[in-house]
Length: 281
Image (cartoon, rainbow, N blue to C red):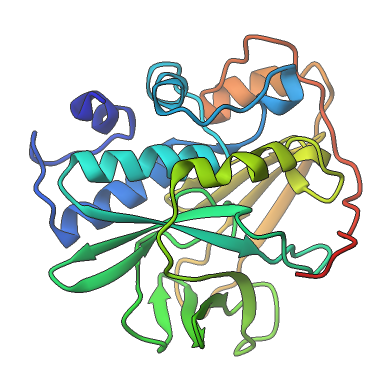
């Protein structure tokens, strides 16, 4: 791990050797989201996702790629540890917005940072509905981030990340994923990483995608579509989306120009219907 090279990769502007402070945590979290795409293009260009840290470092830092949660959050947790933060790896289960069902245990990896006795949830691998800054685990009250509002609701040992979906009626809470605070290890997620590369119940197997946070919104590629999401400039505004259809020939240029990604093998665009899992978790 070359911390300085990693910080340069994500565009972090600050002290050459940042200390483990809340300000540094918030800044590297946002920088990561704005520079490292949430994507699964390896899977749809003839490759397999691997979780060993040297491979992830080479892929994301040296080759300037992105990844899905096991990759982005896996490498980010290592960066935080190298910066001096107290990091605990946690496992979550994502609620699929299309099927409405939760994924199996260990189908999402997240990090908890404990800083001066305060616990923070970090997640740089969740895509469009994810939060921009670490969220406090010390309260169930709403936490506002720009035009978005989130909360972490607790029921027994289970915690539920929820948000007020910006495309639905104001005030309604929608579950995004659930998790416990039990300590996990990187090898605990290998089986679910394989699942997401082979299961018709996984969005990652069914759809080729790439998404990145922008200062004013989000840009998302999926299948043969490019969607631009514009965030409101004030609280009274609304989220707007525009979608452009893409040909096979246009996709490589879009990935290079908009996401900074150049694939080593040809991409096979995919946008198939997700099969609801037979088991309800």
